[in-house]
Image (cartoon, rainbow over all chains, first blue to last red):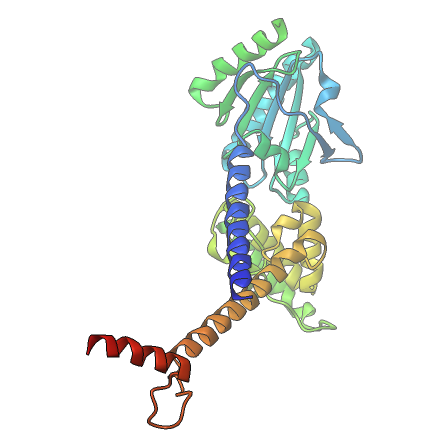
Length: 179
Length: 153
């Protein structure tokens, strides 16, 4: 009886250790990494920030897409907003799509931000940050440029107003549109 | 920071009319320990990030407007998802987070009790089987022992 109890205890302990190890392996394997240049951008469907309905990234396949991650509490996003709006106005006629993804933000504050900066390109809401984490976003603003096949052409970690990024941003859009 | 102070000040100004809440008023201090900062993954009271400040300002405003803790938490969950709450919900898979520690403590207690019981049994002094002052061996063993000893004589 005692031997059986001892064996049972050992089995339970072994199962616990194996379970914890499996959990560790699973978390390492499923760690989110930013999609690299050339890879297909993770698909998503998000709620619109303003108005009802959802928007799916897949619905823009065939068009170059600028995916900008931002939040109303983010200071650099404020200076970037005007530049994005200006670029959107100049690129929209060339078939380039701009999408804003607002993350970890209060929707009321986000709407105020959009209104204050007179942003007119589609804005999506990722309150939980699930989509954002699949894009490996560590701090906003960050911008992805995707080509017509939905592949990443560029990933800019920081505001596109940064001296080094402005040229890169436009070059990436040109490359995405050409592909 | 200035923005947060402005909202807290506005909340205090509004606190006058809101003093007539129909229910006990919750507090920013209480909710700071119940709500997570979404960008830093700590509770609000341990974070001073911009995202945390935004949520603190929201809570302060709602507390002043007489919202209950539950109402404020629900609004935050609707905006950020269930992950915004520090404690897991009491339903579905999240129940595991509540019950597993209790089961673990109980199992540990049982194992500990079992160990102590076995240890105390092992340490108990052996009671002599035979009459007081006897060798404690049965007759057969005693006879065989005598035979063996006799061989050495």
